[in-house]
Picture 1 (cartoon, rainbow, N blue to C red):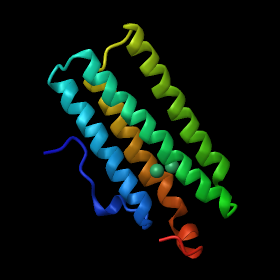
Picture 2 (picture 1 turned 30 degrees about the vertical axis):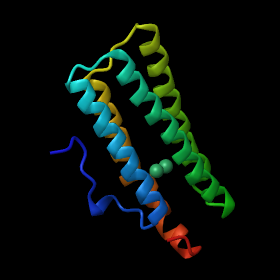
Picture 3 (picture 1 turned 90 degrees about the horizontal axis):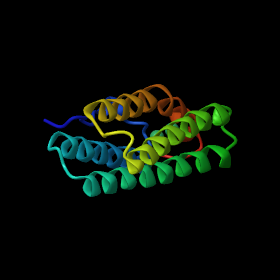
Picture 4 (picture 1 turned 45 degrees about the horizontal axis):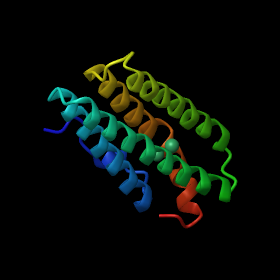
Length: 135
Ligand SMILES: [Fe+2]
Ligand SMILES: [Fe+2]
């Protein structure tokens, strides 16, 4: 069984965004599996970097959509994205310097953040986006 399993309750009812969330889940699952396998530094570092890059891309898509239609929750939502981006960039920096390890605590943090953010924050924009014809 996967570390994180996509469930229909996670859907934000926007196909493009659901697909991106599924991709993020699969990258966190991949990172978790490499961590469990005790994989070497270059592989873990590479997967972490891919996860960070894809996360930033995904955030930029959501933010562009929110701004485009003047979504009222934009700033608050963006702050959550920025906080998380800051945390993972710091983690990557420490990992690259060798001052922190990638452990199952890290994958649990990523899992909890993503699932809470999708269920608690992303899903709030569903009625708004759908009302603008974004589905
Ligand atoms: Fe999202
Ligand atoms: Fe978001």
